[in-house]
Image (cartoon, rainbow, N blue to C red; front, side, top):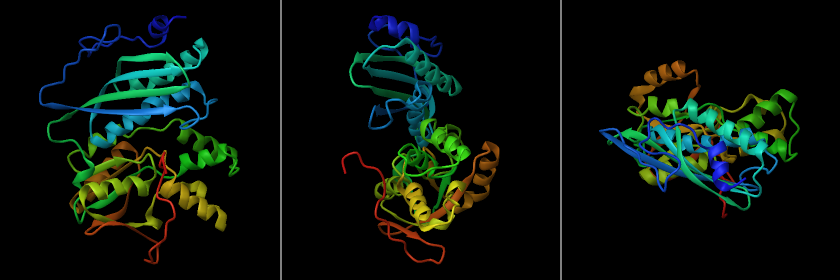
Length: 319
C-alpha cells in the first residue's frame, strides 16, 4: 500500500465546513466573523506515552482526545485537525481500528480532519487541533485573581492508577482495573465544560502532567499563589483501601500522576451557584478544592490544616 493509498483509504472523509481539505498542498479554512483561531499540537510517542501493544482503536481516540482537552481548557469550540503518523509498518487492521477510534471522537465533537502527513519510522502520532473562540474570550492561564475559587472536574488519579496496574505496581479488582485502564487509554476531553465556564472562569488548564504541576502553570502565569485542601480533592473511590502503601500511592496518583485530562479552573466566589448548575447540566462533578491567594507557590493542606510536604509535583519528560 502506498502512502497516498493509505491516506485515501483510512483518513479521507468529507469536510463540509472546510473550503479545501485533504488532497492538496494545504487546507483552506475560513474562521467565522468575530472569532479567533485557537491552535494546539500534541505528540504521542510509542514507548513513551503509550505501550506499543495498546489497542489501536483506543489509541486513535486518545490521540485526538489529548488535543481536544487543550481546546477545552481555552474555552474553544473544536473545528479542524491535522494528523501526522510515523508508522513502522502499514497494517490494514491496525489502521482501520486506529482511524475508527479517531473519527468516532472527531465526529462527536464536530472536528474535520483536513490534512497531515505519513512516514515510515518508530510509532509516533501527532495532531494539530484548531478551534474557534469569540474574540477576547479565550480562557488563559494568566487570568487567575486573588480570591478565586479553584475548581477541578471529574475525579483524579484513575489514569495513573491504571498505569500502575499495567506496570504491575498494584493488582486491582476486575471492575476497578477496567475503569482505571479506560481512564488512561480513553480519556474524555471536557470540551462542553470549557465552553460552559468560558464567561465565568478567570483561568483554566487541563490536567495532563498532574494537578500540582499544571496548577503551578496557572500560578506562575498569573503571579499568584494557591492554597489547596488535599481532603477536598475528588479522588477515585478505588483509593479507599486502608493501608499506608495505598495512601502513598493515592497521593502520588492524585497530585502528580497526570493523564487525567480533567479541567482545573479558577472563578470568582460569586459564581459558585452557577457552577453547581453547570455540573448538574453536564452530569459532571465539579469540586471546589482551594483558593487563589497572594504570594507565590502552592500550599497543600491536610484536613487538620497542616501543610503537607510533596516530593514530586508532576511529570516532566526531561527531569
